[in-house]
Length: 361
Image (cartoon, rainbow, N blue to C red; front, side, top):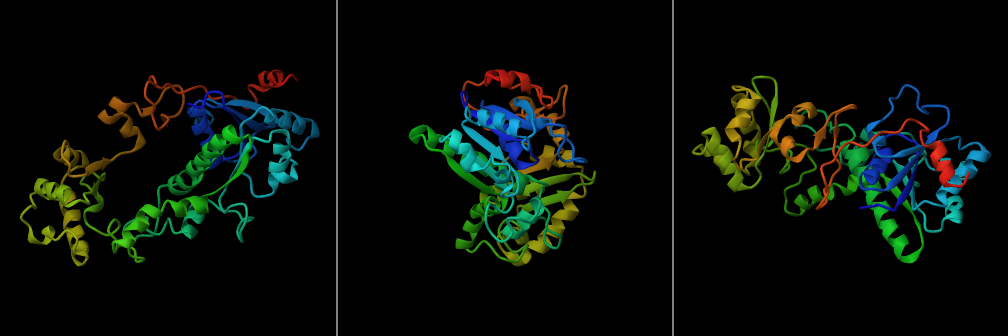
């Protein structure tokens, strides 16, 4: 879908390289500028999955000669992705003004936690800090438990990488139409708050409380996970009454007067306790079999490795394993696309000579 688009990605960690991976998955020529001399974050693992389908050139951006190579590369690019704190690229003389001087149509994508401006812009942080302050972490976990969201998914990926990709694509469309680039300021704090808007709509209907465990999706017995006899879990989220009725019927609770009052919040804790005891009587897979093929909105909670072996994965080929780590295929899918095979991941600086030759160096 993005064949003919070139993106330059400055080596980093977390959401910026994830966004680069998504653009590479979509067909862009993503050239990763790796730091000459090795891993810039000692002690942190390399991220081979995020490098799939990219090319790599090794440069020392503090050296004048390599900065000149970088700018020559930028002159051929449609977009740039960087994930440093505000001001770092400017101090290297590679900020938006420097790069757009050689490529006016360049879409300059900036990925940070706190944004390019604001009282915390210069401060360090990580996924949980950003979504904690934005409000996106507040409803994580069951009532009474400490808030905890799936690591990196809500912040780094949801509020960060995905919003950066949307911003890059919007900028690329504008640049194609006008010849003018832009600067994309993608902040995890902003994006994770924006993701809350679907939940905030419940507030308009009286279904959202600022108290945990009192809202339509984070408090009811029909919207949570339950531990099973084997130690595994099942997820239950039968919001609509017609699905809730199927859920109760399968459990033999269709005639229970207390369970019939689905939206009576005062009953939720007691009904949750009853379901906790009930689900603890059987193994996870037995419960999954009981609800299989129904609209009860119940599903087992699987590890990624277990999901690999599930019939859904057999049908849709989402999870892949081969000569590298377990990884998920690109999403979304496009009509006419063939079966996906994980592309190779470049070694650091593997394509340096090739890219220099393309630049006439």
